[in-house]
Length: 495
Image (cartoon, rainbow, N blue to C red; front, side, top):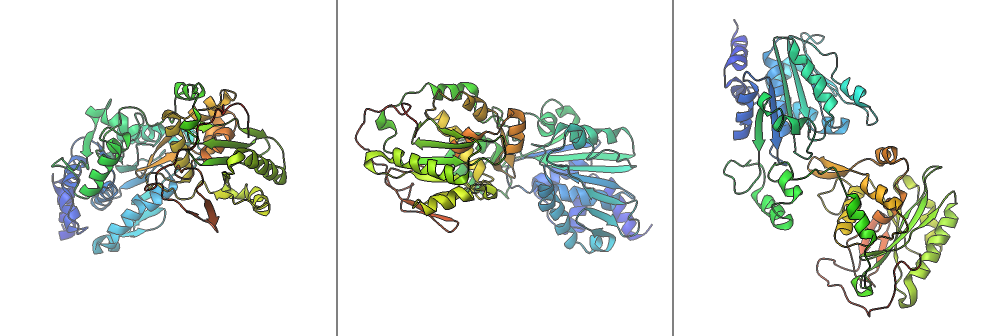
């Protein structure tokens, strides 16, 4: 037996073999929790789950196991997947390349490509593949992502399983029925009270090696990779009981599901609220515009001032010039005698709102175009759309008033769900919301646009230069001013 073969046999069979492999082949020093997970992965239980907070190096842990399995089991097959193609390519697959670059042995033995890692000597028999599914895939198509894989030595690496479909895990489980050494390893943030990660850590816990990783600054077993300063800042800012802190700092499942943005009772309560003018008239006036994208979609113009929203205007099948004219007329009416011109916020994702924006500019207004996929102000959110919608949901819960004249808002506000991806809030894609709702959530989108900027007092000028927003106000330092109380019913008229 050669020296290399002897070493690989030790790495494969010794209880600490995977730990030694990481140190001696990958030239890395694993964290304490990595060591615990590597030993568990080599135990008699074929299933290992890593439930982790944000940032402890769980993707590195998956890569350690992936390279160990490929290197130590001859003609082994492995498959890796994640919540999306981009997440897999930018996360686990990139991590596999990173550790190969640090190891002369792995560089000599294996070839890495964008979709496969293969043995240079036996590429048809000894490999790992990157597998994903289309966003529109149904349960059967999702299950087919890992279907048909069988070998004497088989490994499945599943990343971000806090939001992965159950069908993926069901297919992976089938491989354990055959083969000599077959293993499943999954890792993720505990974002949902359902799915493969939740099931493995709760109902099926006896079947799994469960590794729990926390960033709690007061826990002596905390991951050292998670900044104590950052963790304490999150706890101070959002509270220890916040779902955000529970998931991202402590690595715990939240007390309630994160899937639901708003409940029907919360929206209906907002429709019953009656506000005094002094509860909202200090705030900046805003008009959110959602421009119709397809034949059955509606253009909606939605006005809001602080806690008060007003009856929206709904338009069907009209030109951008007519939309811009209606927005301009509404802005004149909304600004009233105090001449406080509203801030106009138009969804320009995919440039659907570009014609409206151009016409408003020509009329002397300064509308702000919004890109839903653009960056959020708050780093907790995956993109601008998630930030606006979740801020809107907090507004509803925090005392916002909705018009009772548009009951369809109940469905539009309660249908979308959200989850975490890489520690950031992400809203369910609009196409999926539309499919489940039976229509586009145009009313809710238009209202959400009014939350594109932090709340400000009236009179603050907001302008857009090129694609960057600038404002003559610091919402975190200046205090809102109070104006005279007016005897006014916000639901008496539309804008």
